[in-house]
Image 1 (spheres, rainbow, N blue to C red):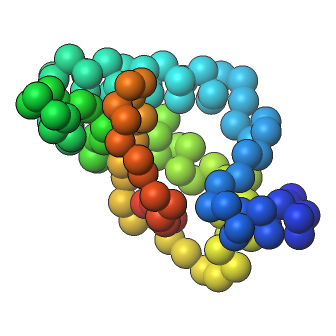
Image 2 (spheres, rainbow, N blue to C red):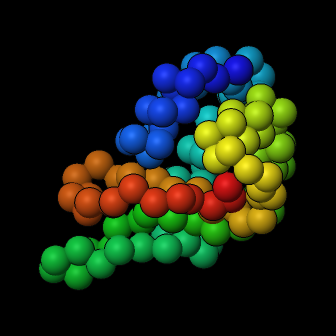
Amino acid sequence: MLDQAQIDHFHRTGSLVVRQLVGGDELELLRLAANRVEADGVAGRSEHQYHILPGGTLLYWRSERVWERDPIFAATTAHPGLLQVVGQCLGHAFMPVADAFRCSQRFGRRPEPWHQEAPY
C-alpha cells in the first residue's frame, strides 16, 4: 500500500498522511466519537488527563481507555488497511495493546516532541 518514499518520510518526520484509509460511515462514526470524547474532556466530565498551564488553567489533552468509550475506536484500531500501513512503517510484527485519544487543544502552546504513540 505504501511506497518506499512514504515509508522513508515516516522515518524521517514521524508522521504520515494516508488519505482515504478510513471513510464513509466508519469515518463519520469515528469523528462523532472523537468529538464526544474531546467535549467531555474539555468540560471535565469523566476521567481524562490535563496539563496545568501557567496561572493554573487545566488544558485537556488525553483520554485513556477509548476502546471502552465507543466501539468505533476498537474497530478503527483493527482496520486491516491501518494495520497494513503501520506494519509497513514499523517493519516488524506488532500488536495493539493500549488505547488512548490525544487532543491538541488550540492555544495550548505545549510542544510535543515526536514519539511512538500507543497502540502501535
